[in-house]
Amino acid sequence: MNHGVYITQQGTSVTTPVVAECSIPFVVGTAPVQAAENPAGVSTPVLCTTWSEAVEKLGYSDDWEKYTLCEFMYSHYKLFAMQPVIFCNLLDPASMKESVSNAELDITNHKGLLPITAINDENLVVMNSLTQLEPEIDYSAYYSGENLVIELLEDGSAYSVTDLSVSYNQVTPDSVTSNDVAAAFEVAEACLTTVGTIPDLLVAPGFSQISTVAAAMAAKASSINGLFEAKAIIDIDSSADGATNYTDAIELKTKNNLTDSYEIVCWPQLKNGDYKFHMSTQLAGLMAQVDADNDNCPYESPSNKNLKCDSLVLDDGTEVQLTLTQANNLNSNGIVTGLYFINGWVAWGNTTACYPANTDVKDYFIPVSRMFGWVGSTLVQTFWSKLDKPMNRRLIENVLDTTNIWLNGLVGTGRLLGARVEMFEDENPLTNLMAGIIKLHVFMTPPSPAQEIDFVLEYDADYVESALQG
Image (cartoon, rainbow, N blue to C red; front, side, top):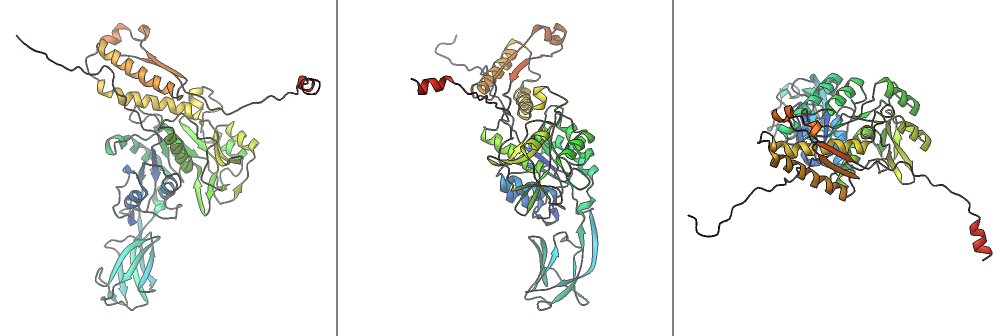
């Protein structure tokens, strides 16, 4: 017999949703890791939340032709102030290198400057005439800016010399091929287990204009870990061998088969002061910025939002002048571009690459398509813990109630026009239920971007009478 008042607790019938992160870029390319203080592994996802952390793990150089990840670092952290980023560097100083023998090194103020490509390792040999100098006794070697600095030490044997002979190995960034980059997007599969984050933007500035790379990006964007979707932000080649005007860009998009709903295609490039950016780089930053302003919900288009540029340019730096009609022509063919108009330099275009061939609104509008991927990712992460639990009515009602409450919240904030989840008998035959398979049907309508607003102006003579004869 129990005599008294007793309390027991029961688990909450509604689960707290694990809302998926969005605008997390997975960026593949090359970085000057030979100059990094704590270099990240090659072909390994590395999550960086700040500029200083990225520089520490990847190094930095303004030579973005050689080191493509540095372009993204500068844009995302310095211009858009966004984070985090998952980088994947493919430049391996251990294997992608060449030797430089007996190079003359001028010494000024007891310092000589080698290029940042030089590798500071046991193969660095500094000679004063026929005498080999000893590191940390005669000289100190360290990276600063765009150089590997050889600084002569005051107590060393060569403090006052004006020239030296140096042999060393230097990295060869051009050893990284388009095939390497295409293959590296498989590394996105490891992001969840290695850095605990699932990317939803795939970027490869300097490489994505190559059709094989673009195809690999689109394929991976359609399925990460077999569960999650992303968007591949791809540049159309704006070099002399690519598209040097907007009509060429439309033709090249078709020629390169850039017609996938998982692709967002851009043309041309952007310039900001002395810096030149691939549009994919800045569009990723802009999308992250817009999403962050909306509590990390991707329901708003990046179109007509400000880029960080002062001109559109081709690969060789030639300025591109686009009229509104020409920019709209690009948009009509599924290409995002830039436009200088009423509110300055903005991204211009709301559609994925599948447009105009595919006119399913959930595929061709960027924010609508992204919302479907984001809601799907949230549902997977929220209910993964329910897998393999006893399949009973309580479990089903928990999933239905949790999902409907969360969807209603999105409707209430205007991020969905309407949404619900239901379980239909015809979608759940007895054989499936016996096999432990539940199918739940989610209806949802993200708002389309208001990309056209028409005013009809009409002269109304009745106002003349009321104003002048009354």
